[in-house]
Image 1 (spheres, helix red, strand yellow):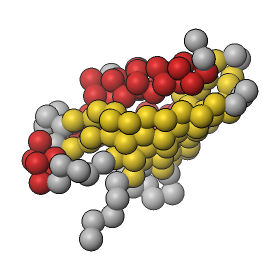
Image 2 (cartoon, helix red, strand yellow; image 1 turned 180 degrees about the vertical axis):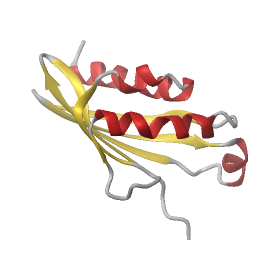
Image 3 (tube, helix red, strand yellow; image 1 turned 60 degrees about the horizontal axis):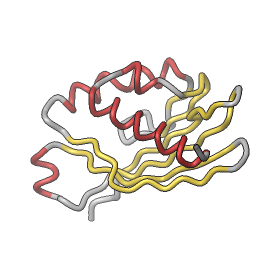
Image 4 (spheres, helix red, strand yellow; image 1 turned 90 degrees about the horizontal axis):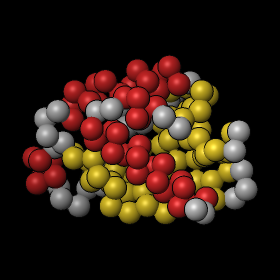
Length: 131
């Protein structure tokens, strides 16, 4: 399996875990010192796996409204020990997606190899600004 294929599978597992509300699956393959810049505050991001863990329960509660979290496009570039990926996702409630069907969550992921395996060291989630 190529590094790009391995990373693609890791990110797809993560997205499936997010959609399923599976916190252990969301945390899997993440570094202890992860930094995430997310859509909701805090605006200066969260640092560390414990702070990252704390961001997910409110999202899971919101998602129980029947929201979608689905990768539409995913590109991966990998070197020997660092890699990055960017993706577009459908993320929203049925009403939000009806009102703006082309709206996309933008995801950028930074990874590094630790002990011979890929781990996520950075995530950035954003939506385009509405005019």
